[in-house]
Length: 126
Length: 395
Ligand SMILES: Cc1ncc(COP(=O)(O)O)c(C=O)c1O
Ligand code: FES
Image: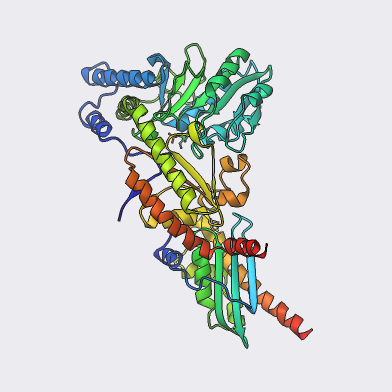
């Protein structure tokens, strides 16, 4: 059902965990099946220094979370914003058609975390 | 790696004795039972013997057995065939919210085509109350269908009492006994049923074979028209090797049932108690004790998702199933768990182990050794688990 790459990321997910006092946190729920993903970002300048995730969901949801964290680490914010759901799915060697919605979760959580970072910056500026 | 198959409610392996008997009817005694030559007649004889074996297992007359392509077709034949045959008498149909899709979808189809349907609720254990049935029956009710045991949570319904009520009120009563056959007694007279569905591949027989018991005197409009086989109820050249295998599987299941049920009940409780002992935040789905099928274990493991559990179990050789939305093609959680009032997120972490003939105490202990590690790993990843812990800590 899943590619080897998906199973690898599911079995050995990269960057699981939390970042205390993260610069940006994004949480999204999947309206389709009710799963949840949270992404933490540590940002310096406009570089994503560190990233962690927690996910409650299927194999595809865990694997896409893991993959997206690997893809953004060390990237600039504009580069991270460019990462699409399709790119994450593609990096995993594809997902079964009924699991494509799970990859939306990962990119959406990432984008939500970046938005949270900007919101916090705005607030800090007062 | 150790391999532990605990998905016997999905399907079972074919008993070697059944398989070798079937082989004869593929390669040597391959005649068409409708032919008058010796090839045909030896197939006919074996087919009729199988009918006796199947009928004998459920306390029916051989003439009351119609062979089909499985449980799904038998359910369809019962529901569609009876509704069509008796539609002049009334338009009201009754079933329950926890039926297998083969029954539920068939009723829904009829509801879209001129019939009126009542779907009865169940309690938190998946149990139907006889009182609910009594209240639902109307003067124009023609058909009632209730499964004997649920395929997901193993709940055993009070079929004999419901059957008695249906008889008093003159309503045809169909029972899906696909999951109960071979595990608990199934007798068409004791249960007061008019039609009963059974399937071969759940009792160590081949896939693609089943039967509908239809009490003598009941009319059914066939679904499949053609050469008039199976007393015109189900046309098409009979699947003789499959049916003969089904007959043999019934004979074997009948001989072993009592002892096997006792053995499985012990394994079931060892597994269920073991899970509850070793893992926190676990909810048992379905009843405990005698109202539960001897081979069914169903739990919800909170804060983890079912498909992740299944994948992780599979990696250590354990085969199980789940009612999680993520494992269903439709992305809806199990309709059975929802009907029992489980919140979406609890249904999400549901896990079913269905035990069978090959399973041993060692298998159960292997699951009990592996499962806690898997749950621990997935909970470490779960945003719901740390949220719960934080909230618990704050209190
Ligand atoms: C309760 C119940 N009814 C019907 C069926 C369908 O039987 P079959 O697979 O033979 O079509 C099943 C099998 O999953 C079942 O569990
Ligand atoms: S997260 Fe539910 S199907 Fe993937």
